[in-house]
Length: 558
Image (tube, rainbow, N blue to C red):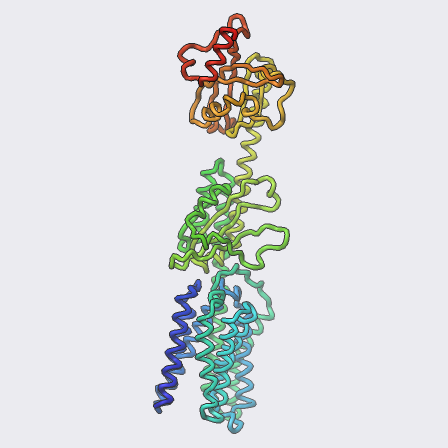
């Protein structure tokens, strides 16, 4: 009875540790760990039944444990997890299972005490060790190492207990309970199901041949036994056949799924590229990108943000918590001296298991042509984003190309418009300026240069540089408002003299060919021309006091 209580305590403690670890560490997928807790519960029930003498119930519980462990391993090795592509692992597991079957039937099956060992248990233990070892190599952390230690303890107990039953032989089961519970409690357990970019391995004929040999081995062994000595290891052969067939169907399902996903991604990218090529403005690019994302990930995206510059990107990420805004870049995604194609943001703690992927709108050949930055930000299921990460990076690059093309076309259009304006009004007496929204001067007519008394304006001159310091705030506020208007100000010449002008501006920032202000200046300084008059009285009241005082000084000569 005391032995049964011991197994109850060990099983309950291990299961509780797994559940607490899942709640505390919040892995991307909780399914594998819940299956692991179910396998521990089944093992504990079997141990308790065996201690109480109910061997039939114990064998049934042990038989239930291995399918749960198999499902757990399938979840841990699924595409997008730490192994990324499990094709080679499945091929090696199937071959190992067939090889162990041959060794057991023809070398160890009937050899004295060794024949008391359960071949099915040993076979399952070895496969479990192989997967745990592969996890440890792919992601060397404490959680994977503890899973491997627990699998080794299970194998040791399954081999030692039939040979020498006793408390010492049961130590392996105790190690299993403790190690697997500790593996779930350690924070590194979240890395085993963290999203990774899928990189399918190209098809190789030798691996297909190895899988075919593995599937054909159990029937061949059964045929040899039936012809020679009679079938004495039918249970072992049946177990090996089931394992190899399940592994083969899993391999086939993975291949079909990868092929179908590749076709879907190819079709989505092709349609997105056509839509982006036809896009003529930013809203069309945004619509094409969102349509492509929903076609590539119809059910796996919770939020999509398309930021065309870094200012919009900061607003898109403002909803993330302070912890999520600390960028968590996946190791190995970038080489020294190169910008990363994408990176992950940690789970903001919303509880829905979503994770955020940031794909910058950047391509290496056009890094200089797009200084404003921007990114495609997606929040959704980790496994789906991890499987389509490379596709989303390509989509972001295509969007960057479309935005650069639109900006270049607009720049060429503005240049042609400026050249046309320059040719038309080159000899006119009107003082005209074309300025950007940030008041940088793109074009100035010759009359403007004569007005301010310079031969040429500086290449990066702004309207702010031409206006008198006392009037700069007034001009700045006028140009910040929407629509057309008139503003009175003084221009400062290099010799310190001032020219009082009436500046009429048109707001053409929404015009595709201008995207700025067109300013026409008229010199209204008193006495500049005989027929020229001072501003009308209704405008004078709107001028600042200092400007009115300067006009009075011109009029009354003091």
